[in-house]
Each structure stands twice: as structure tokens, then as C-alpha cells.
Length: 65
Image 1: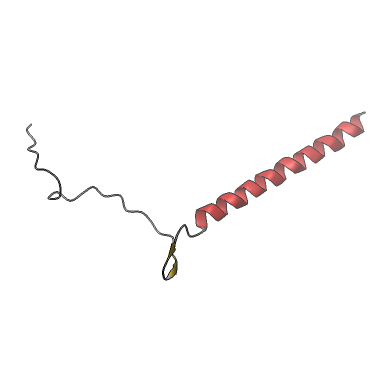
Image 2: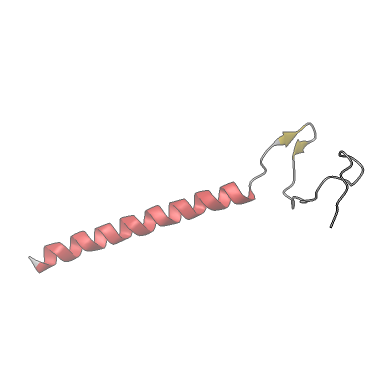
């Protein structure tokens, strides 16, 4: 009985590791693949700049305080 439980546990462990590796591979493909195409081909990956709008582009608001 112990021999049967060991082989089933090993098979389940191999399945879990295989699914984890497949998920890791898919995550790496999604992270490093180009996301959208441009007329010149695929766009290279790059950092996104997070900046607020310029000071003169919005309505004038006086800050009191």
C-alpha cells in the first residue's frame, strides 16, 4: 500500500512542477514580448514615463495656504 501511495504522490508532484513551469514560461513570454505593432514593425519594450500634465495646460487654480 505504501508503494502505491508513493508513485501517485510522485506523479502528482511532477504534474504540479510541470504546470508551474508552463505558467512561468507564459508569464515570461507575456512580459518580454512586444505588445503592439507599428507600421515599422513591432515596437521595442521600454519604460513608461509617469508625469503629470504641464502647469500651463489646465485651468488656473490659485493655491492658498
